[in-house]
Image: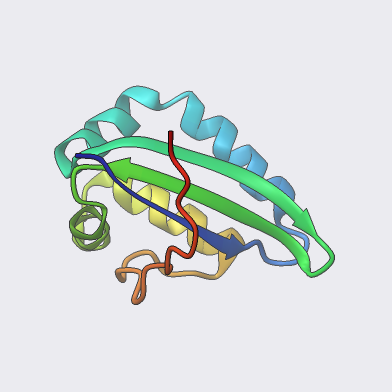
Length: 113
């Protein structure tokens, strides 16, 4: 069974272009992303930039065998790719993903066919 979680992360004011550049760089490093995510059981990681009146946000969807466990393992990882990834994301969100997301979002509607 696939587990999933989605969350929103604010982009710091003036840092949206940094987020876009990071995303472009990640797409050039898909082999490394795959090598980092596959052992965690992550099978999908999709990220959108959502403009809002309160500023831009990243909307992140993660799917895999156990997303909560993957979150903790990613936070603890010191691999070069994961360290680079977390440092870059910290720079444009202010969020330290070296710490597990403390509370995963609450699902309030889950329609599936």
